Image (cartoon, rainbow, N blue to C red; front, side):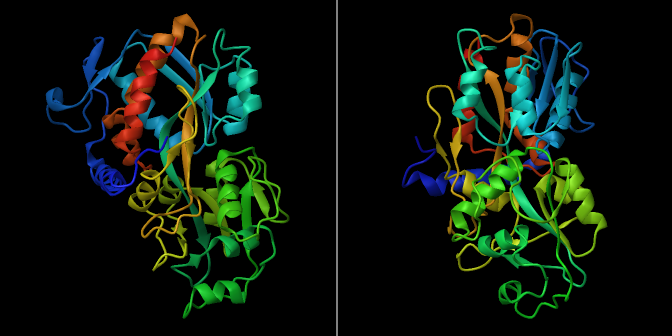
Length: 378
């Protein structure tokens, strides 16, 4: 089921961009700790701020995607600040490890930048008594190709060229393929220092899906959470590769926009075949999200993203972080807290709070679907 059809596409894209433009309304916790409270991000009256439905006090343990780490930080701060007695403990261990911990019954939810695979759903039935794990889209993001190249302030890449860089087929910054995309740029005669994730990563999975879809055969490997290409250096987590690019000259890697912004890293624009290269901005990613399609069935809301889009102003290298939960069989003692927390994160206030940190608020048609699923969790 597509998130929009035909004549509705333009309106939804505009709506997604409008939501990105209103990020200053992010929420923080208030001192009212009753069952339903308000959250305010300013020193003014909290009366006009959005309400947070706290549910029952409790503690949640979760793990997974490092890509959503900054979003989780602001969400749990706001939620716990507004809801007395509630704590959320989230460990950024990577998408693969998060799903593994979920299917071992160690966490109440897992964060993953890739939708569950059939084998992972089957494994979840052992811990989701009478049900199975489902994907709930929660944090929208874009993957920045971040670079630190001497004398270069702006850079354009396309999928085939980037794929060859990360596969060590292109090893010099002044390679003719890079020069052709950057006429007039003073590209140094320097070795490219590429960094990739050492841990199983949904960010890696989405990057390699982009290479496979738009790379014109330049990427010889299957898309995967596990890095398979030749050469390069590795680091753990989004924070790890971002730190390497910040420190190492003539380097390149891939991180979410939030980490690019936090580390003041430059992001390459992408030549998609549109009339001009597309910059790595939340608004341009929102254009891509507005045209996503739901590939999951029932209450599973996994998305199909168009990594090969050539639409004007559509940034192709995007990801969605899903919160992985049981549709049935959640632990009774934490179910109410789980539903309340997820209800806040998908709310307009929660999406805007994450948007202030470099994430992309999801289109309303999608958030409405997630909001409808959360109360049905059992």
